[in-house]
Amino acid sequence: MGTREGSSDVPAGDAAWRSAYRERLERAARAATRQGTGPGRMPATAVRGPCEGGGMDLESLVRLRRARDRMDREYAEPLDVPALARGALMSAGHFSRSFRAAFGETPYSYLMTRRIERAKALLRRGDLSVTEVCWAVGCTSLGSFSSRFTALVGESPSTYRARRHDEGAAIPACVARLHTRPVRNGEAEATSRP
Image (cartoon, rainbow, N blue to C red; front, side):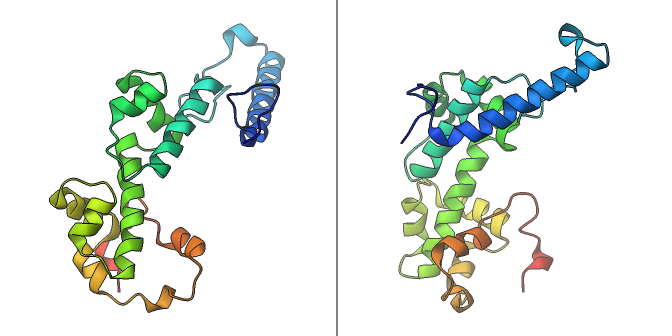
């Protein structure tokens, strides 16, 4: 993986994001100076970073992104918030608050959504039982897995597994993943399912 600006710890993919972020900060500072508020007395809403509350430095965001990438890669491993927080060089509470501000959901919620996403793919294959899928995606409790699956998808894992999935058979897996990804807050409404 390449790096930029001689920094060995920041991936090259972040260069465009940082540039846009710095440009936004500079524009906001210029606007505040024109309004006479000055950089020391800028209103709280004048400069906001990618987090809703603003005030998060770029290095913290990079560490949060790495933690999120780790959850995407190691979803089947026994990950917990304190371990992820240690990897991001933050306390567990600060990590959870910062993660939620940056990505819109808690670390646990994000991890469970990724696990359910992978579980849906395994259940569509049909060669594994619901219990085997539960263990394969890193869940340790079948009851918790079934409850979370039902809440996100709108039907139980066994019902989802038994349903025909021929309509997506000809679609490439990378495209199918986008359309079958669990969406928090509303995907599971019973009226939206056929």
